[in-house]
Length: 468
Ligand code: SAH
Ligand code: SF4
Ligand code: F3S
Image 1 (cartoon, rainbow, N blue to C red):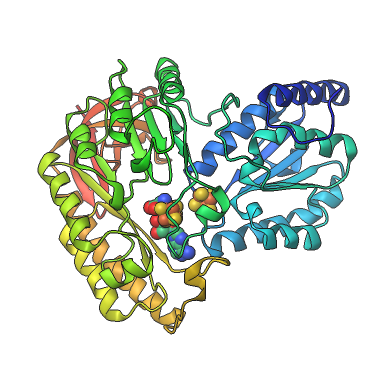
Image 2: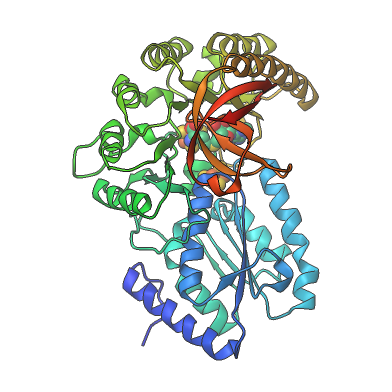
């Protein structure tokens, strides 16, 4: 008999999966229970949702895109910026009427937002129709929590139940059949002063390389063509493991697996990015020529306030080395505009840096204060409207650079993974090794395969091509 204590053992969680499967078998009377999962935030959350889907699938659930048909609704949430949280609150509020129409539906919330006490309390008080809430540290006990909700019918709120181990053996149900995520580590120890991630994802911990290699091999054998290794700071992979291994060594070991596939990784932190990593990229057989290296700000003063632990000179030295070793390298980055205390002079240094590096594309954000982070307590005198103006200026400069970079690719031949149809008649969309989108006419039977294409045209930052 299973007791009520929350239990980390994968065997016990499997027992709960079996119990739920039995309940579902009795309840459904010919109808399969349906789950609707909505994922917010980054690829880490996407990968977590794929595990939750794996567990639900073993419990007997199938999946629907329509929440109105679902027996179980789950939002996997993101806390990185206020806007992300507002969207979740708005969409959860909208479920109230659905619950009224279908009282038997179980509504659940999980992910990064739920690791914050003030958020979980708000959900508890303001959204009584939410029956199950669990944080990122409780994902491995999801079967037990679901069982409790289904059997007891009481509200279950659980967070922070973790010994911060890596939990292996959770089944994964991947969304894509040729493009997939492979987490190599969890958590973050960097505590950049603006960032909530270390608080909601816990301490940095790496998976054993043998487990990662086996999973990569299984994915390649199953036909995956585009595999992205995931971690908040992949460059510090291996810290705390018994075996001595760096990220570059792990990458090389995976790259040695035979097959026709492309290997990507994210995110690299400049403070830990090594020449060894760039050399491995340059000599790799399968490694994409894309380096996503967030610099956040072009001002040393702001980088220090952000606790990023590198300066512009160090950042540019990595970029120069990457350009010298990988001439066609595609560089992308994340930038925050309007960090507390940032002046227009600081911001101009960010513009200067993007002009120097010439990134293929950028992920740009206006600073958003997060409760509990050091930056949220810093003086922030610049009004949001002013920050928005700087932000628009940044976008305009980057648009010019991206257009120039794309135009320089016209006439080149690129190996492209065809990913799907564009929606326009007979047009397909794919990605280069550098992760740039290319639209081209072709047969949809080529979706999921690599094809050589000549780039014929650049329209701002979208490339057009023809299959060779
Ligand atoms: N681990 C990754 C990034 C994770 S979060 C790294 O270190 O690069 C993704 C991006 O969101 C960050 O790179 C940063 O640019 C942005 N971000 C994080 N916290 C933010 C905040 N409070 N306000 C605005 N942008 C933020
Ligand atoms: Fe956040 Fe910094 Fe960790 Fe990235 S490295 S997740 S920005 S604390
Ligand atoms: Fe958001 Fe959590 Fe990722 S806060 S960005 S989903 S790690």
